[in-house]
Image (tube, rainbow, N blue to C red):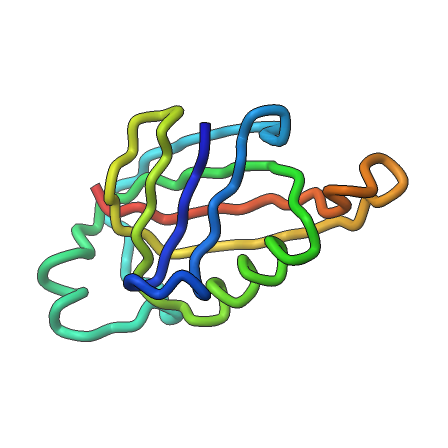
Length: 125
């Protein structure tokens, strides 16, 4: 059971999160008439073909290693359109952006996966 976020086909800017035992919480909400956020890379393709003003915000709270947390921060810094797959909730090749990323270091609870990360994705629907 995994969640994968990727920028293009470059493996160095992608992350696969193993959700078995590492997924602490999950939430999903839908909103209508949402304006394009300023951090979205606003090209004509995105405005016309991707952003529909109706979105789903998907939030995961997961445990991550140092390397996976760094990759996730790098993906957030791109503010680029990502490809999103989640085999638990049936999302296949969805397009999304990282809306929010919050992290708390909790190495005393789990030294192998010391980061407790709250990741919020914006998925046009």
